[in-house]
Length: 289
Image: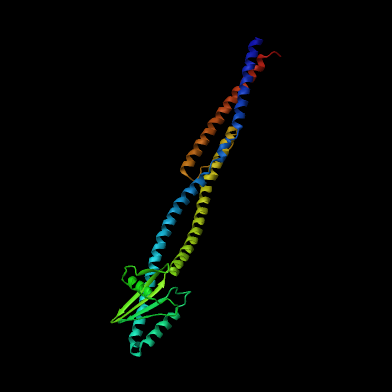
């Protein structure tokens, strides 16, 4: 009889040891490698921002070419208008002699400052006579030939001294006027506008990332942290906490399942504790006084 009680006592002790070992295992923290994994909101932010970055780069590249084409077109309109005005002046001055025409061409070109109109040059062909602005020392037969070639080109551009030059042109009876100007300022202006757009889009992107981050924290990170907390309490056999339904359908379904699991575990623990109490009472009756 004592041997039977000893075996039963050993079984009860084994149940206690098994329960304690199970509790110790449940108290273990998650594997350390999980803490090194990237957060969900980090992955989402990286993915969203990567797509936005590619889109913004493509948009800015397209916008740069569109803006550059518009700026060059507007510059060409301005140069053609200047050439027409000079042609009208030359037409009215041709009765005053070549010196009057040359003086007018030099004065007009001198008014164009190098800082605002880089590479500005004027060439006038009146019949067989050619007048070139001598203000900036650019007049040469080679330059005149380049302007003539650019005047017949589709894009009306030429390379002079390593710089891209845009050529305005007008013809009036026996008068042909070429007005050229470098495009470096046009490129610089468009790049400056592009930089401001880039800064604006960058600020907008940072604001968007902040908003997305806040939404993810409220919709995903905090609810998931709450779910983890309830599961960890359940691992310690603390079933007093339940999960309120999160604001998303998937997490709400998971919360319902965790609550159901906690209720089932709580019920199982209650039955186990009741069985243990009965076992102890039986043991106390069987053991000799």
